[in-house]
Picture 1 (tube, one colour):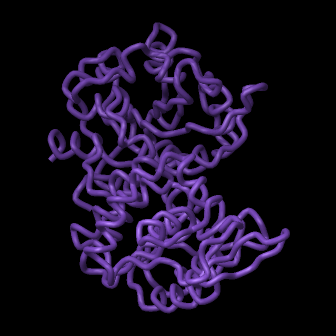
Picture 2: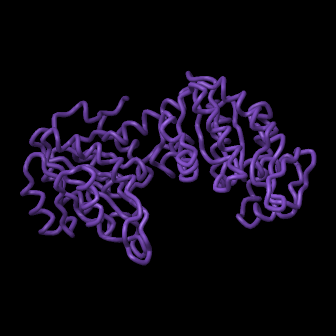
Picture 3: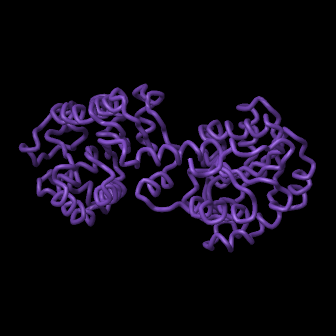
Length: 404
């Protein structure tokens, strides 16, 4: 790890600002939090800071102005308090008089969560890192702090004031979530862990093709195993007729413009991109498997077939690093979870270093009881994909420019 972490600083009696990502699912009617996974995740960093005697100021956001989930962080404070089993102070303010007085009155080991940073008008404005370092939140809070801890990996692809603005003006280190995320990405992208296998499925087809393009052109992968709609697009790009109903799904999602790029990749890297040999379709409410040679079909393609599962499992058994992004089929239905179960199980049983990302991937792993068997499950969606594709995150850019 070339970036400084909590291991590199003494925080006792220091005032520490830690930016986390508590953004959670909110009931649009009641405005109540429906999950607390990210609160639990970041509680590790907050707990460590407090236990080491820091005066902890927690910054976070929830939703976007105008959206149904744009609410105060008071519920988040109470949930964090429950997770930590420790008092968490909260003020319905960010940089006003009440917030500044609360910061100044903190004692060593105490925790203060300020309100939603996205309530500030200049938080999300498109600016350079330098311009954000002169934003209202930095001007108000930085003079009161000794250290900035960036832990919000899931928002690290956002060049927002509370994400990057403190880095030019305060000593900055990674929190535990940020540290683990960056380490996992560096490992999965390392050319030393070969063979590297990417499992790309689900409905995020555009991302799947873009990831494929980057890792293929930059020699970051040995095998790409496709499933879900990603596989269907690549099959279509090979000139295989899927059937009117299945092509209509691709068209309705606005994905057919990706066909030329997918076709080009297949032509340039035919030995690295794997598409299904057989597929499972919905037939009178049951599962029926068809060879790709039997296509087109009037039925909805809902999973990969048995021969494909066997082939993918054989490839995964020899992998040294595996990236899982997207299920192989309609994993929510018991008849079509088989492909996802077989492939994901083969990945975790291979002994390879495995990284998983994406909401449906994580949900499928949890449903299959494989979540705890993956080497690292990423909390980031967009940030993870940006990093995997070699795009420098604003946080990393700021760290390299101002903290090295």
